[in-house]
Amino acid sequence: MSLAIRRVAAATFIRRAALAYLIIWVLSPPLSYGTIWRVLAVLAMLSWLAVDTLSSRSVLLRPNWPVLGCMAFIIYTVFIEWLVPDRSIINTYFQVWIMLFFMLVGESFRRDQPGDARFCFWVTLVVLPVWVSRTLWGLETYGPTVARTIVRSSEEAQALADQGFGGYPLVYAGVLCLPFLAQLAFRSRIETDSRKVWWQRWPPRILIWINLVLVVLLALRAGYSIAVLLAVLALLCVLLVGARSLLPLAMSVLAVAVLTLLASVAYEPALEFLEQASAGTEYSSKFRDILTSVEEGESTGTLEERTERYLKSINAFLENPVIGTLSLDPTGKHSAILDRFAKYGFGFGLLFVALLLHVPFRTLPSRHIPIGLAVGFLVVAALFPLVNNVGMSWGIMLYMFSRGAFVVMGVPLGQSQQPHAAAGVHVHA
Image (cartoon, rainbow, N blue to C red; front, side, top):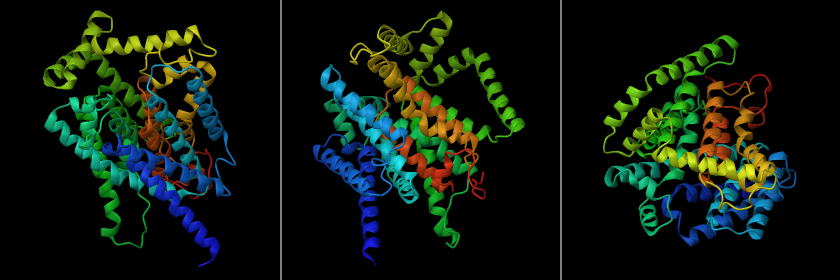
């Protein structure tokens, strides 16, 4: 084996070992609080950056606009945190910075590294069901408050995480990967070695189905209404929006519109039924809040609290639209997008949105990606940051898992985000 081949093999090993650890670290609740795990995560990120910098296709040495935007956003926000410290815990910012690190990794996948993307996809699908199933067991044993308690930084939250129970980040990470799981389970062929016999080709399909079922169950059981809504939207997009040609696309959009119309007509009896059916669960009060707000024409309860937080961020932005408040303290702290506009002003707020949405927007014009998957991916990727905060697990799914899913579906990464790719490459839907 030549020296050049050994160097390539060593670089590949270091990259994949670092990425595998980072995926395990982010998705594994017991690793959330330990200092040693965080130190190892920093070392893993530095190792990946070092190997990438030595590569001839380095995203840092030959950056495209997302990489330049990412570096500009991180440098500016670090400077603002040093210049204008606020009462928000620094972990809030670390989450976003690490999420954007995963964006750098995702951009590197597009530079002749489909093997790394595929590797991260399967590592995620191996790790995810371990903690999703453990969290489901915790929800059944201790009740629906488990997923909400872990969101808070407290001794109780750490005790639950140490037992392997995931919360908010795990739930919504699963929701973001749901359109890809549904597409692979129901609509697309998985790229495998055709020379393998059936018992060698079926384990990947079984793993995808296991993840799909567990993610849906977690979305239903965790007590997050938004997670249920986004999961339903993602599944409907994948299953109902099935063609790019005008007539089939119009028919599928019409079908979604009809379903929405029927739901709007029957919302009051439906909400009353759901409230009664969910009595004693986390959802009962949410259905009552929505029904009351419809009846009284104003937000109440949990819906009222969210509305107030969003309006707080909007008002803070309107007061300082150019440079922002430079602090999270005057914001609602409940919307990744609105809070960034309020804190950093229009320019860096818009940059943050562009960094969040450039991957799903790139998939829309590609004829090699099913339109239902592209729309479902965009819907979840856009709506969730608008109504909630995002973090590290969101970055793994948004930038890395999605690219790996495209590779597994047989879509070359360089073509997965181009409207007109070379002939002969297609997704079997």
